[in-house]
Length: 297
Image (cartoon, rainbow, N blue to C red; front, side, top):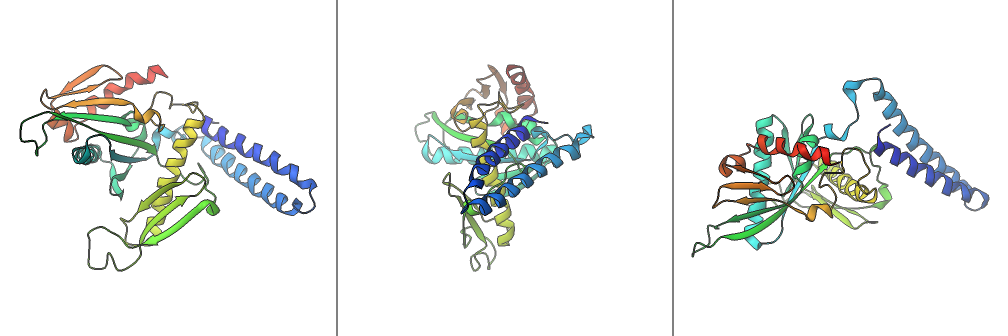
């Protein structure tokens, strides 16, 4: 059984044992029994999912095969950083199109990329991307430095990471984006808040509230999984050398130097030329260059 599922089962076993201690309390016994049954059912569902795939090597449950939720946020550099973040999002969207992957916009700076092995390809792209260039608004020709942060998380299902509905605070609101004449007349946009962690996600790209809610739940699962990875200190197989964790994400991984037409990855100490081509989605050589990180796990 893969490490992540084992972590889930161990966690459920712990909760079951803790709940069993309540069976001796007459006032809580009935509630505890129902909770134990629910936890046992969750455990069986996880085991069944693994057993159903265990007989086929082609249907191997591997995080590397998952779709990706990719989020870009501007960091240091003000408006220029925001623009840089948008350019990075376009770069990854263009790369995905060239690879034949499906792109779905979840929020202003969040996309879902669907395709075989997407997470395996993009998992090393998470981190701080620094740009050095002369902004179009710069009058004196000075080179400015800005940064944007990339988050790359695998798409998860409820069986991978179950969220208690009671922990969710739901709000429907009107879309704030541009669109057809009805876009702002109906409360189709969704905002979810995970009460225990305070994480908030938004989704407003779909026409129907139910679709936005489903996509928002996917985003929330991915963010909660990110926290779980940090708790496990990188012990989940295949993730030790990635920049998935929020703390690791603060690391500056790349510099895009436009005056010198050079991209440098600081983890592998390697550079590539022709930034216009790279920014247009031609990332094959760069992504292939990250494979050396596999040996550092």
